[in-house]
Length: 416
Image 1: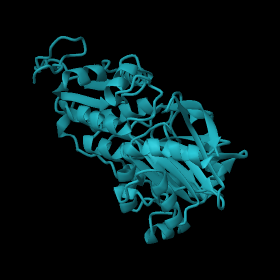
Image 2: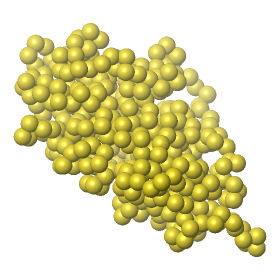
Image 3: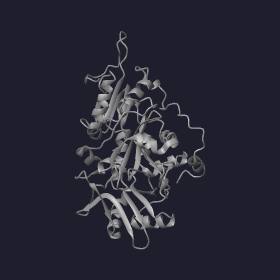
Image 4: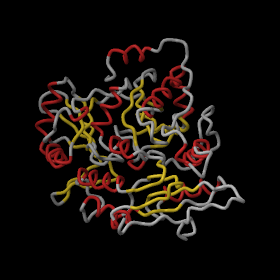
């Protein structure tokens, strides 16, 4: 394939593909990411700590420049985030300023093209799964169809096109939703998200990290409130061409007087790590001022419902069985007895220094070490990794015998 990166060993020497019969075949890993990025560095450290040779790193900028990359048949390939690199961001979104919010649809199309241009190897991330995970409308429909509790949404599966502010207002009125989240369909890290609430004629408020400057939208690290409808309409109208997802804003549970949700990492079918995120605003993302809490507090608050919460995350991850690891955003309702899945993230494992949940099989391991351990279990035949099962999974956790009220609601309608 002209212009593509050729398969090579970890030392950069072209691979002959003929292992020595006198020694066992080492497991070979590769990662497509941004060299020097913390995600790539943390994964590389986990691989080395497991006694394996460091993974071959294939740079997204090279994939985009060369029109693809090739991998040896026995290379196990991890796809990582293309974020936090200005050159890659410019190539994917055609923006000169990395803080710009617009360009999500362009980014989505080009990123999927790049993912599908990867040739050979055995994948830890399925391209079709990635395509769904980076479209909030499609992801919502897949989860709802599987009976996973999600917030109600009129845009689920792309059923309704949102062309601008007037459409958002009409959907809120038609579906009886005075409080909604408006999300860019292909966004991440709360980029472009608005928490929108109305209270009677003329009373409206949008909470967001978006700021308008010089006629363009920019991400900010400061969450702000907008109360002028004209300002809110201008933001929504600017975001709409890239696609918008609208869903009911569910009242969240609280911890220590702050709104709370959880990021739960699921590796090979098992919920292995959980972190509580709390905030005084509707946006709990840690980079927007949210505080990282302890899962123990959530477990104590949830009581007997904790096992159901983890089971819900595992069922959400099971919708993407050909992808080793996902991060599930879990929304606890007031009282910590009911839960819904807000989003499932393809690259939701960046939780440095967080170790595994008791009973998860990942005790003492961070999210990257847990994935490496799962790889070692899943691919015992390093010489022929493609012989391993195509789907990742783990024995399902036994649910408590008592009937959970949310299960009854789920049988009627997965959308709450």
